[in-house]
Length: 183
Image 1 (cartoon, rainbow, N blue to C red):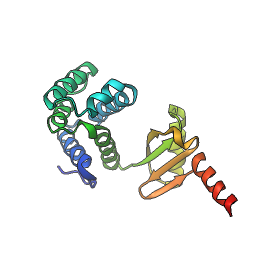
Image 2: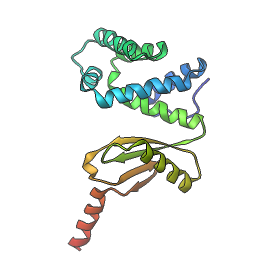
Image 3: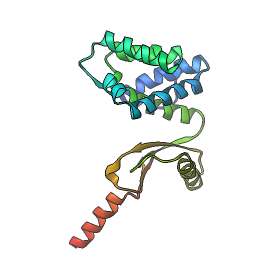
Image 4: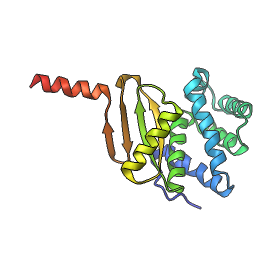
């Protein structure tokens, strides 16, 4: 049961392994839900980010810590064991990229496409839904939106679908205006 989506880099290989295990266990969506919870924890908890990114924590201690966090969050045994493998291999630092790759693989498996969106602030559920609908109307494909917050773009959005990029950020508009004014 190999993943048909090309796995990009080290994080892609780990994501493909997790995807294959979840597919075999018929747990693709529950695994995605667990990963979404981990993604939210990475976004919201400085302590959790420090745990996964700190080289000063031994692999064994990191493994124990992520197992305890996983159990406290109510994650599945599959995801807790996967976190343990990442910790054992010293790869917890790529967890966010693994989650992103898994989401892409799941979208492709379900026949939809994922748009990578950068916004200046967190989008509400209604804004995200409206954006998905507009992108579906534009592309003709079901669209999942993966939002990353980057306040440096000031406002607007940067949307990447495959190799296509739509940049309507205020930062880019100001940059273009500055270039035009220089002549």
